[in-house]
Image (cartoon, one colour):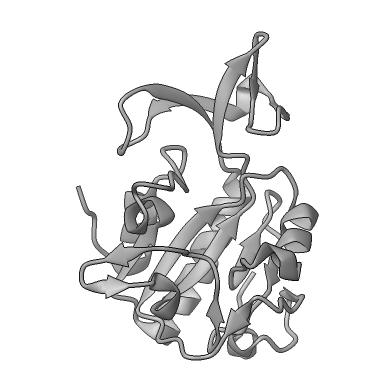
Length: 201
């Protein structure tokens, strides 16, 4: 799917737009920040991120089948980063576009099964065991689907062409004491190299 320029304004096209009230003015998109939803469904993520009680949102949510829903226009500040820091920049909501990938995230082994924080089971075939770069011990992590990753690449390329990002980061990079997403199941270095044309160690 090619994302047309009009969708960068949240108008029409192939991407569904479901406006979230959880946004504000005053955003200069210097970075792209990737997250996982810590949930199992696209509908659930969209429902929560458009609920005023959440006080959270993202510009885009990408489902496990590659579906894309836009929640906030790219000239508005989505509330995706929370307390965050990158270099000398504080509050990365002011400086970044946020993409949420539907993924149950970090998992624990319970009763012979992998489960997330809400005890929702994830099939063994959809889990890798790995040590997060900011942690010391291995955990389970739900894998991302190929359709989802491919769609994220397509979206990021269009956004980079428009905004010329300085870098692509994970929530784990800008809030390392609080967050572990998108986690080791997402190859952020490869993703970054495909979008920005460079590979970081």
